[in-house]
Image (cartoon, rainbow, N blue to C red; front, side, top):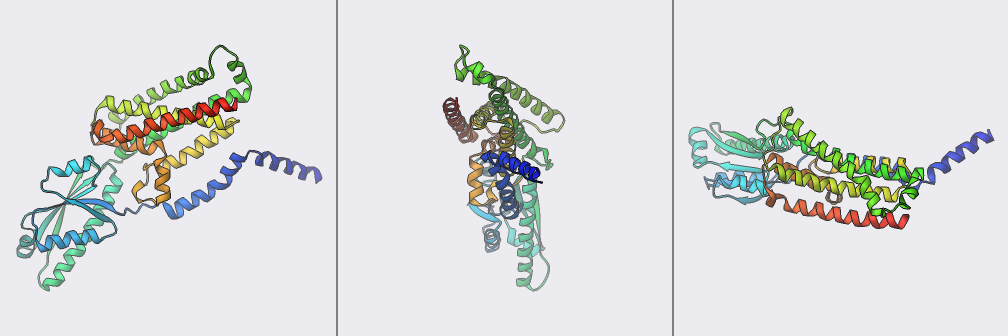
Length: 368
C-alpha cells in the first residue's frame, strides 16, 4: 500500500511541476462554465438601425420610437435617400434599415393595410433572421396598439423583408470566413510551436544553434514551410467555397489574399511565441490547441456576435487576431468591399504581427 501511495505522490508531483499545464487544467472548466453560463448568449441586443421615413407623420414617428425603445434596437440615424442604405451598411454603421413609405398613415387608416420595408445585413444569416423576428414582433405590437386606439376596424402592417448580401440566407456565407480563420490559426500556431519545441525536446536545437546560421534564421527556416502550406490551404478553401459551397468572392481576390497573408504571418508569430514559453510538445499543443481554439471558436464572432458579449469578453475578443481577420474577410468576400473599408483591420493585424514577432524573438534568445 505504501508503494501505491508513493506512486500517487510521484504522479501528483509530475502533474503539478508543470505550472502552466496545471493552471490550464484547473482554470479551463471554470472559464467554460462562466462563459457558457453567463456571458455568451444567442440573444441579440442593441442592433444599430437606420430609418428612411418618407411619411414623416405622427404614426411613423410613433413606430420608430417604439422600435428604438426596445432593448434589441438602437437608432443611429435618419436617411434622405434609399441609395444611402447600402453605404451605411458598408461603413458598418447599421445592420438594419427601416423604410417607411409615403402615405403610411393614410394607407393604414383608409385601406386598413400598409407596408414597411426592412433591409437587413444578412452576411450572418442567423443574426439577420433573429433581427427580423424581433422587429416583426414590435410591428405587430404597434399594429395592435393602433387598433385599440381606433376601437373599430382592423389594421395590417406588412413587412417587406430584403436580405442584403445573402438573400438565400446560406449559412456557408457566415461559416467560410470563420472556418478559414480557425484552420489557419490552428495550422500555423500549433504546427510551428510543436515543430520548434520538438527540436528543444530532442536536444537537436543546440546542434542547430552551433551551425553557421543565426538563431533567427533557424526559426524562420522552420516557419517558411508552414507559411507555404497555409497559402495552399487558403487556395483550397477558396476553391471549395466557390465551386462546391457556392459562396462567391464579391470583392478583390488580391486584397483577400493580402489579408490572408497578414493573418498567416500573425499566427506564425504566435506559434513562435508559444514555442518560446513552452518546453514540451504536450504543453505547446495544449496551449495552441485549447488556449487558442476555444477563444477563437467562441469569442471571435464565428458563432456568437461579439457586440452582445459582456465588456470583459469583448476586450478579450479584440486581442484575438481571428476576430479582425473574420470581420475583414466577410467585408471583402461577402460584401465586396475594398481596402478603405478594411484598412483598420489590416493595420491591427500588421501591428499584432510585429509585436508578437519582436516579443517571441526576444524571449527565444533569452531562453537559449
